[in-house]
Image 1 (cartoon, rainbow, N blue to C red):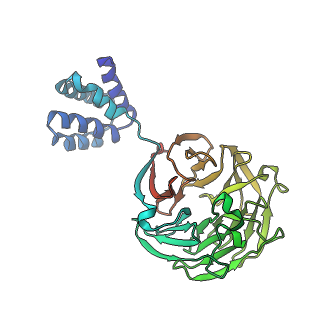
Image 2 (cartoon, rainbow, N blue to C red):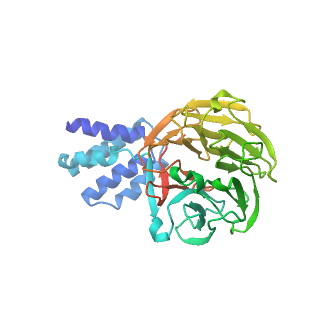
Image 3 (cartoon, rainbow, N blue to C red):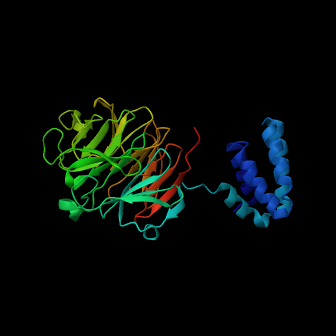
Length: 361
């Protein structure tokens, strides 16, 4: 590798990345190498407090060149690697082992307003877990009575279906798929009510699937068998149904419904691969091609797309431009909490806490 080219690369990345991050990384490595670590703090303050003009860049280049000369060209490739190595798009920063927690094949999770994680399990149970991985409570058992579940039933050959959402008021909504209903609970697991029954008529479910809840208590439920999205009012009455009859783009199996920061419904159609936007009246707004199956949205409107057969997560900005793809081995799109918490289930059913390193702006 050309030595002078390496110096140019270091300085170019330094100036291009701006006055906050690059000096910390460059000077930290250099100072550590030459045993003069105390200089790092003073240099960092100097850099951040001075305007970045041509003179400042000239001085910075001179200091950096001198430091690199002191370190020696023999160490330069390592410095360039440390400075230039891109951070991954996504990172797992903590893993909560399912077996250690006693979880039985987790199916889905959602993050509550207080940051707790609610997980549905294949053994017809719900577990509440703190953000640092401690179990708070569990409830549920096989059956059809209030507070009991059937996540397997007739669809057992395809795996359990047990989607979960937590409303802004902390109430927990669960698609009790093979009991053909949605059950609602207080945050502590106390049963509140249920709605839905088996069938293909208005207000009934073929297979209650992914769902989300708005601040007014309206519930939006995707039906994977009937292939439509229904909006239920706070008391369980049907307000509208959207399907292929209302817009052809909705034809197919839709998954991952959520609300974005603008209050739009966002979900994926795994038959045509599109991410679809509706308003809360069921009116079609927008769609884009993303190879979508499972979908979630962060608090700035970026869209996270998981494929039905792929563990990769693709991230799109609010203009539908692809930011990047993370081979994160997740079981679906991540779930976002109100304070920036990000959790998901990995391919082994463990709960993982995540960080995404997205471009600024």
